[in-house]
Structure formats: C-alpha cells, structure tokens
Length: 138
Ligand code: ZN
Image 1 (spheres, rainbow, N blue to C red):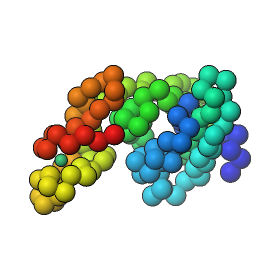
Image 2: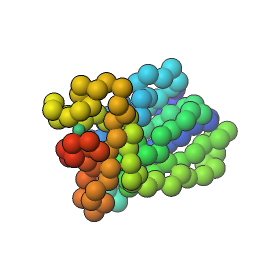
Image 3: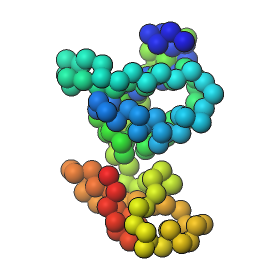
C-alpha cells in the first residue's frame, strides 16, 4: 500500500501525537483485513507533531470513539483518490461498549451481560465516568 494515496477510505488526521495507536485499537482496526497505515510523529506546523491513520477501505467508523479519544482529530473521506468530504467529530455524551470500567468492585466486573456505559461528566476536561460506579475513565 502506498501510504500517500488512498483509493476509497478514510484519513484520520490531526491526531494528538502518541494516541494514534490507542485510537487504532479502540476503533477495532486491528481486527480488520484491509490496508491500514498508522503514521506517528508526523511534523505538523499547527501541532508540532501528530499521528495519522489511513484506512484504504470503505468501513464503518465509530465517530464516537474518535470524539472520545481525540475530539480535535479530523476525518477525511476519500473516494476514487479524491477528498470528497470531512466528518464532524464531537465528544459523545455517552460511550457504550468502547471502554471497560477498571474498578474491580464495579457491578460490570461481575455482571458480564451489562453493557459498559460511560457518561461525559466534564466536557472541558474530557472526563468520562462509569454509569454504575462513577469511576473516572480517561
Ligand atoms: Zn464502573
């Protein structure tokens, strides 16, 4: 795969340097079969350094995950090698089954069938808390 050119897919740009790998995992990209490139520590005039993820396939992308990990990231939509649009990224109010509660006493650690739900409780600081035990998750 030529990392400079994508036929049909997405370029997730302006990811804060160092979080590209986490975004890759939370988006479930490691389970996919299509060409994916993660480019880390790319020099950026605006950000100093940034990460970029390129996906050469027309897949469903969970924009809530991107908004949770890095709401300032941008998503470019590529069709036939052309930039045809951008997706709007917002911090989601609720995250369901994206991250798991790390509190061992949380009910979700014993009740396996419960969905893992986190609520945005402080938008300025990007604080998410478990719906059940209110443990904070970054
Ligand atoms: Zn919890």
